[in-house]
Every structure is written in C-alpha cells, then in structure tokens.
Length: 429
Image (cartoon, rainbow, N blue to C red; front, side, top):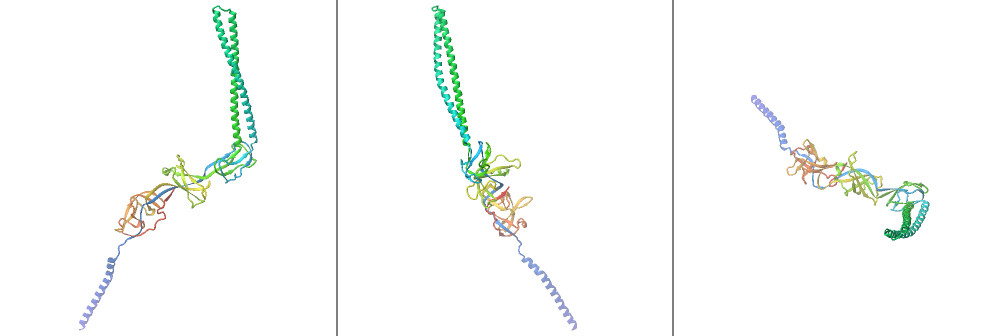
C-alpha cells in the first residue's frame, strides 16, 4: 500500500515538473513568436513638397556710390572783382538754366567796347574816303588808258606815212614823244589806282578785325555775368562779393539731380546678359526699405584689367520723395536671367556623391523613395534651378533624405512653403 503511495506521488511530481517546464517553455516562446508575427513594417519619416513651375529671376548685385547725372564747374571767363551774387547761390539751392549766379564788375569792359566801336566807325569812314578816291582814280586811269591808245594809234599811222616818205621825220618823232608821254601818264594813273585799291583792302581788313574785336569784347562783357549752365542745384560756392577772380577760376559747382546715376562694376561672366534699356533696382542705407527704379543707359565696352569687371551705368529718376543724393552708398540689383516657367527646389534638398548631384522623389502609389540625378542651372543661397532630371508636379523629399536609400519605404508629411517660393532669388556677386 505504501509502495503504491510512493508510486502515485512520484507520478504526480513528474506531471507537476513536466507541466511547469511546459508552461515555462510556452511563456518564453509564445510572446516572441507573437511579437514577430505582429511587428509593423518600418518606414522612414520624411517631409516632402510638390514642385511646380513658377517665374524665376536671378539677380547680380554690386555696390557703388550715387553721383549726379551731370556736374558742372562754373568758372570765370574774365577777370575782375565780384560785384554781386545771385539770391539763390547757397549750397543746395535750386537753380534754372541761364539764371544769374554772380556779376563781375563790368565798367572797364563797357568802356573798352565803346572805344572799339568808335574805332570801327573811324575805319568805316576812312574806307568810304578811300572808295570815293578810288572811283576818281579809276576815272583818271580810264582816261589815261584811252589817251595812251590814241597816242599809240597816231604813232602807228605816222610811222606808216613816214615809211612812205609822206611826212618828215620830225612829225614821227613828235608822235612818238606824245605816245611816251601818254604811256607815262597811264603808268602813273595805274600805280595810283593799285595803291588806292591796296589801301581799300587794308581798310577792309582793319574793319573785319575791328568787328571781330567788338564781338570778343561783347563776349567779355556778357561773361561778366555768371549764369547757370543747366537746371539743377548749387553744389558749392567758392566766392564772395569783392573777391578778385581770374579766367579759369572756379566759382560754383552745379549738380543735376532730377536724375542721378550709379555706376556699378559687374563681373565679366554676367556682362553678356546686361544691355541698355533693362530695368534695375537701387537701394541705399539711408532708405533701406525703398527700392528706386532705374534703367541701364550704358554698358562700358572695356573691362577693368585689375578685376575683370565691366562698368554699367544706371540712371534713376529722382523727382519724388525720398531723394537719392550724390555720395550715398547704394546697392544695384540687375536681372541676369529671367524665366517665366522654372523648376526651383530648396537647396537643402540636394545631395552629392561620386556620381553627382541628386535628390529623392516619392512615388505615392508605392510609398517608396527613388533617387533622381539632376542637371542644375543657377544655384542660389536658398534654392537651385533644375534644368533636367525632374518633372513638374513630382514630389521631392526636402527633409529626412539622409536616411533614405533606393526603394526605401516612406511615410511623409507636407513641408511648409519656403520664404522664397514664387519670388526672385538674389545672387550676390
């Protein structure tokens, strides 16, 4: 009986041990199997953006200084003391073309002009006398010429008669003497006439010189009044009333600032894209939020050999408020590439390896990412222009691409638009 008890107890113990081991095995193995069966597919979380064409402009920027469209130096043309100054000759005062700026004492110029006019009157009177005398001398010359002709004719007739022995020799000699007398009178009359004509020519030359001198003196008299050469403002004034001035001495500077110009230096790689007539934007430190609209008026044909840059002259209308003033530091922006339809991607989207530049695009139907090799155009600070390798409307990965590989499963969220979306990209040289 006792033996049967031990046998039953051993069987129960064995069953208990086997049951315990089985439970432990089930506890150990079943959750791992279940976990493996229920584990979800792993996907890479990324941000994406659909790329559509939009306008694009690339700009080149250069820094320069505002200068007046014209700057004139008003100098004295004659000497003398400054007798008066115009009412609006302080720096910054507006002036108009022809406005009187200063007056040089002109008494001696008026007196000299009067003397020259009196001298001209005298010369004209002398010329009239010479002309009258010339008419008389011309008459004497014509009479002497006629008498000489008659005497020569008479001599020839007497010579023929003498050769025929019809008249005595004394008659022929008398005719010859008369002819020589008339020839002498003719030569004297001709000499007098030529002398008178020479005196007339001299008088005429003196009159021409006198008139030229009068014109010069009139100019000198006009030059005693200093006038503005064009519309503008007074830049500087260098004289006061009573100052003695000399020809060539600077009196004023006049600035035309109704329009101003900015000459920017542009790198040679961009100069072929810039031509006269294109629009330009100008900003200054004085008015950082104001963009002044300008126009390219000149593209200089020769580069600076020191830095291979070309000068581009931009004209800016300056009639509103605020005004650009000469000497202001300015930034000029010029468009060097404009596209109506361009594919632009965030620069951070790009990746590079030994094969080149690429990005990842997402296939929404398969929820997978695929590498796309790119051909790029302009690359700016924020965006890059895609010239090949991407199609409008495709979805590109803009964040999280460093964890991707070809065919990777992805889950995505849309990316917020960039601040430059739909705007021109600034490229500063």
